[in-house]
Amino acid sequence: MPRPKKVKMLGRAAAEAIFERFHEIEPEPKGELDYVNAFTLLVAVVLSAQATDAGVNKATKRLFELAPSPEAMVVLGVEQITELVKTIGLYRGKAKNVFALSQLLIERHGGEVPADREALEALPGVGRKTANVVLNIYFKQPTIAVDTHLFRVGNRTGLAPGKTPLDVEKALTKQVPERFMLHAHHWLILHGRYICKARKPECWRCPIREWCLFKPKTPLPVGR
Image 1 (cartoon, rainbow, N blue to C red):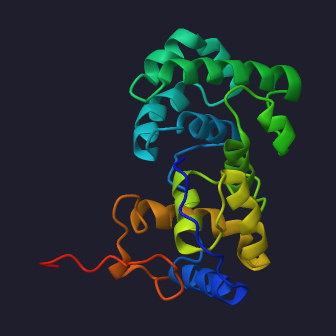
Image 2: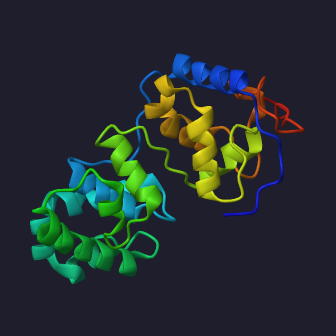
């Protein structure tokens, strides 16, 4: 992730106002990865590293039809997994990780996805971000998964400045009101994906611009 520009942190009142606004707009935000159970969600998130959700969904449609469980994924084998996900970036390494984590889920957890960060991070291809996504979406734990979008939004707005994803995650756990923690992850990622974009944030239509510390705000494009 690029080194963020140094900005001051927003006050708690502004942070609360931001999440109040997100809640008003979309009370129940949803992730954009397709899945049918905890296992397929885990696999989808592992495959999503440096790939778009749309691209992952296209590849996993057939994969999950054939292998919706760790046992079925092991039977499928590395070669067939590789063939099914070859449209995704870094697909060879990801296919090996999907096969290996399926084996470990069977060996260590009876084929079930554990609702525990440490156990999840012990699986091949699963880091803190991936573990947090699974814990948040499937197990409804109030975790914050810091991806590129969330890292950018946290720093650019002043909501949660930090030099590393972990810094941003820790800052957000202090900034986000408890009642909004479960959905904070999705609100911020979707905001970064569709409005607070990397190259040119669309400040003219940003619902939280009155509290954001980013300057200068980008104006409405000519002709719009």
